[in-house]
Length: 283
Length: 283
Image (tube, rainbow over all chains, first blue to last red; front, side, top):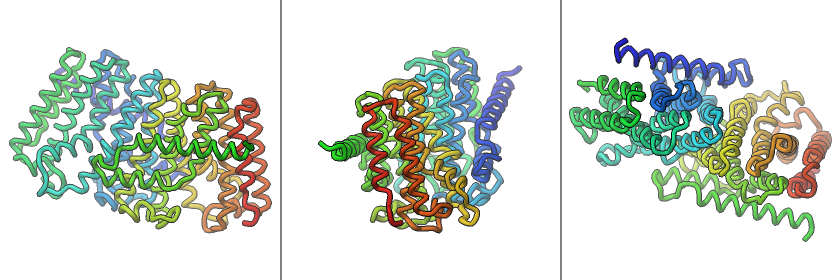
């Protein structure tokens, strides 16, 4: 199997693993309140690529562990991602009616339910990491997830994104938003996969560095892909060519971070390479 | 000092301990996004009685421990309580403009900020329990908090409360809402105080039983206090006299649950007795 084919196979298995686990562990649609539980599953099973779970599993593999051990972390990160999209789409925030070709949760189920779906998914994410069998790993992962989802990370980035003023933007302010709104959760995914695999502080720091660089590059790719300049975008402060160069640099830095893991880090390195190959050339 | 005066002193100390800890541990108002952090503190420091923290500290004392050890649990339960009020007050939910004589968070700071304040406080609650020094206690408390805040507990109770139809109510359906919307968090407070104190499964079950009975009685007292029959209330299915009798019974059951702790459980027993004394006699 080629390197690329092995990576696609790995991603497909990651998706299947996390989806099957979430299908089993989320409250059943028949459990009351049934409407809430239907809406939670609508939000979670919406055709996402499950890239963050793939990174969590890739980190476990880099640590020499069975990827399976990172399933609670992979599920948690996907639930936080899903919650943040449901709340971001609300009328008071981004006011989006559609996501991935379907009505958003508040359009399909009403605003009250959408708010409570987000709240429930966030709580459920912590129930996921609490399932890690080693108490020290469960406690560390829970702490890291709380940090990633906090007002100084994910939520703070969203707040500053909403208040973004293009005329005042510079590379530092845009990067600060990207670090919190996007990279924080990628960092948690990769670091958390290592925590689930039982890694010590020094290799965990390497994984965190990978997640940080990868997450920033991911957001640059997203900005290059979406020319909507009414929102925070790197294209307010860099040309497309500069942004591509910066993303490439970040991905090379990401790969350097995981060199100590050797060939075990093949999936993480592959994901960085894959993202580099996907950088839009004509924004 | 009389029993009553000792309990009031204990409650005042509990309030001071949890408030001082939250003042130190929540992100500073100067930290960006400053507006979000101001709004978070506005929501948390709003003149609440800190009864749930008092119960968490009371449980630690019952376990023979220094109440201080339960501070992360006390802070967490208060943050979840605060988050749930901020989201409940939103226009799409209860649409309340005032709480404790002040504008609600969405009135004072806007709806987007109110949604994100609630999200941040929920994440912050998990950061609090993650501070418990014993990893097994931190992991257990995090798991219990996730359960209490979940779609099958706190959030599910709120959903069924919003959809409540007085004509269809019976004792079972009203109690099911009370158990989830109110008692789940009281249970976590008392049980979590025991977890922080390092208790084993059997005494923890006793504390959980106390929290369950106390929480149900608390909601009955609240219903007796507030004659708003447009919402879910025990007064749809019981007379005021019956509801008072039921609350008294629940509080006696609560006290029986903690008998094995002997005189160490003085604060919990005192809180049950105090609530019995506060049951409104003329609803």
